[in-house]
Structures are given as structure tokens and as C-alpha cells.
Length: 149
Image 1 (cartoon, rainbow, N blue to C red):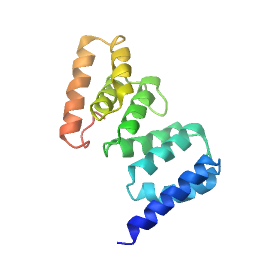
Image 2: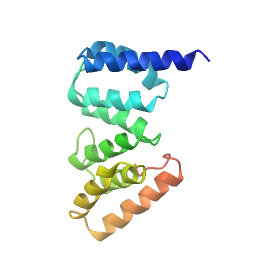
Image 3: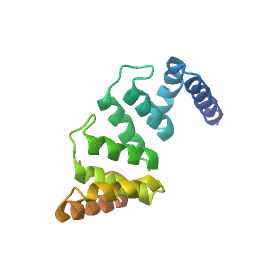
Image 4: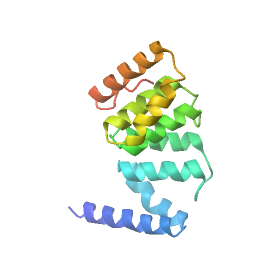
């Protein structure tokens, strides 16, 4: 029972450090939480690796953390993972998977997901869009265990 308050305190300590530009402390506080499955801490580590804040910039590591958070239903991570696939950052560019993640992010409340999904659809063939939509359905039904890759 003590773990929850300590985790919340650790997350808050990391957030305050992050906001003050003390990325080393944020990393120290958030890494154990992220490794323990905290989706917000996972997403935040993804942001840190994407931008090289307190760590060496590493898009592949950013994608790893974003994926862990996305597969727990964290909509912002799903949206950002879509952007990583759209732009080929840390992964091979793949509009079908990007569309899938944007669609899932939209369903989970990230309003930008819909806009990005519609924008990327303009660059896709109808078969790719249909595949992405089917993959999004399978991903969500499987509770993020079968997400197209």
C-alpha cells in the first residue's frame, strides 16, 4: 500500500525537476516508474529521448518508450507514435501504421489524431487506409497486443 504514494511523490519530484530543466533528476525519478509500467512516465521518457533532454538523443529509444505507453492506452503516446511512423523517426516510415496509431489516438480522445489521420490519408491509397482501419480495430480489440508490427 505504500508504493502508490511513494510513486506519486517520485513522479511529482520528477515533474518538478523536468519543469526546472533538471533532466538528470527527472530521468532518475521517472525511469523506475516507467520500468514498472507507469504509462505517463514511459511517455515522458520518450519525450526526453526524442529531444535529447538529459540523455543522448535517440529516436529508437523514444519509440520504445512511446510504444510501451501507447500499448497501455495512453492517447498522447499513441498520437506521438503515429507521428514517429509518419516521419520515419526511430522506425521505418510507414503511413499505414501511422494512420492506425492516429486513429487509435483519436478514439481514445486525442483530437489531433483525427486531423493527422485525415492528412496522412490524402497521401495513401484506399487499400492502405482500409488496412490501417482494420489494424486499428484488431489492435484495440486485442487490448493493444496485436498492433500491426
